[in-house]
Length: 85
Image 1 (tube, rainbow, N blue to C red):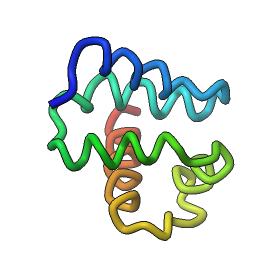
Image 2 (cartoon, rainbow, N blue to C red):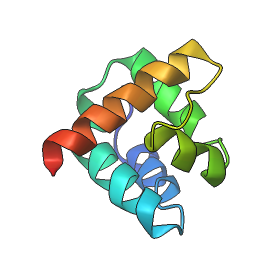
Image 3 (cartoon, rainbow, N blue to C red):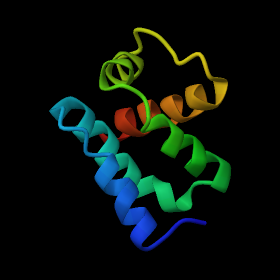
């Protein structure tokens, strides 16, 4: 499990500089990341390596990632965002 300084680094990496993405990723990581399985945590970290334009498109539901593991995380983030509104 990830915690401490590594969690802080992941929170910082979730701040993308694009307000729309920040409003989606930051609350998700702060609320959900530590409770996720190790596999889901690793998939989230992998998701952070994606381009902002891809993330934006995925979260708007315009398309899904080619990687099925990323699809799972994107769906979790979308569900969390919809429930938080």
